[in-house]
Image (cartoon, rainbow, N blue to C red):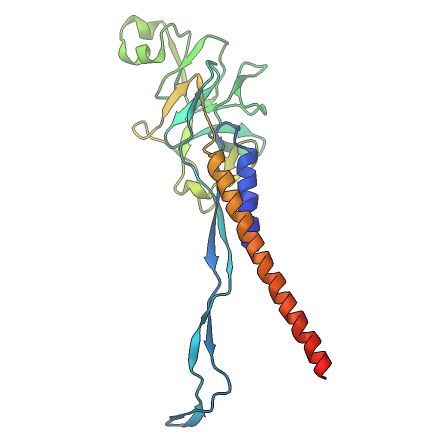
Length: 270
C-alpha cells in the first residue's frame, strides 16, 4: 500500500503539470523485499551428520514479503512541438538543456518559454537570464533570430535557414551575438528537480558538459516543447493504483478480522 501511495503521488504530480512547457514526467521503480524461506517446525524426523544429529525441517516453500520504492526518476522523452509564433520561445528537438543563471548558480531547463526582460535580456518567466556560451543574451524586440544550430543573430533580415545556406551579403547584414549554451549530462535521469522547470546536477548525473556542434539538438524558434505527459495513460494508471491500494486494504481488513475472531475464541475457551 505504501508503494502504491508513492506511485499515486508521482501520477498526481504529472497530471498537475501536464500543461507546463518542457515538463518531464516522474516515474517510479520498485523492488521486492527479500523472500522468506518457509520450513516446517517441530518435525519428528532426525537428520544425522558427522557431529551428531539435528531435527529435520523440510522446506515448505517461499513467501513474498511485499515491495518497496526503489527510485523516483525523471523520464526525458521528447515532448511534442507547440507553435507559439513568438520570437522569444525556443524548443530543443533532441537531447540537451538550456542553461540559465540563478542566485544558486547555473541551472538547466527544457522549458523554452522565454521573455524579454526590462534590461533587454532573454529571461525565464521567473526572471532568470538565458545564457549563451559567453554570458546572458541581450537582444531587442523583433531584431534577432536563432538558427537551428543555436546561433543568435542580431539585425537579422533573413530567416535562419537562409542565414545558413546563403553567402555574401547575408553575413554582412547580420551580426553573430552568441551561441546558446546547450549542455548534456552523463546520466540525465538522475538530475534533481528544483521547481519552475529547473534542474540541478547531482553526483550521480555528473556535471554539465557543453555539447559539441555535431551532437547539439536542433533549435526551433517560435515553438515550445510540450510536456511528455500522456494524460489518458496517467488516468489509466491512477485507476490501476487505486484498485491495487483497495485490494491491499481489503487484505489487511480480512486479516484483522480473522485475528480478532481468533483472540475472542481463545478468550472464551480460556
